[in-house]
Image (cartoon, rainbow, N blue to C red):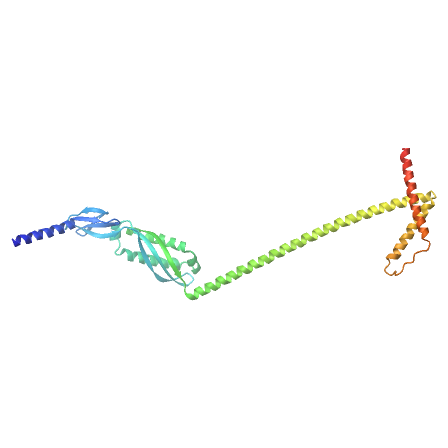
Length: 312
């Protein structure tokens, strides 16, 4: 009785072991490799699978989801011999479980070493200023090189991001001074440009003002010449009238001529800067009679003009 129970228990245990070896459930996002007597035969996708125990066995369990690998910080020497400290992250995904399992011994370690080596190569070919300002170019170059190198391993590198590039403190201070000097230089240039523009505008304004003043003087001179011309014409006409009257023996014309000269002489005496006292002649009535003669001449001229108009 006791031996039969023991045998039954052994049979149940063996059956459970065989069943566990026979039935395999692969979770979502994973793939398992199958080996027959240690040799790879096929890959199991997610789901329920049955394997012949003791002949087939599970080889490697590969994570097929995208994974993140942190790149530790390292010192890198740039092209201009500046030492910077760099770290980053790598996003990769296994596309072929068999290659990732059997083409490389330690996938994560190999990928990490490959990324760190290429970071030194890429940054070593760039100046410090380029390495600080061209993050996108660095990431693109790293991604291209690492993705090509990991392709035989059945791995797709999706992104490589440089997290931080830290120059030494003395370089940071020197860069800060350089940036300050550049800002001051640009400020001085802008200020000089402003002064230059202001001077140009001022000179242009003075030029326009001078041109307008010259135009005004030209117009004034033209008007003055025109006025003198008209005055000369009027004086010539008056002189002609007086001459005609004198030629006909008109005494009033003679009186007008004398009175005109008399008044001009008095005006000259009054305008003289050395003249302090003006003596008027006692015979003021003579001047008045001369002015009356002017009126008579005017009447005679008007009467002659009216007679000539009637004769026509």
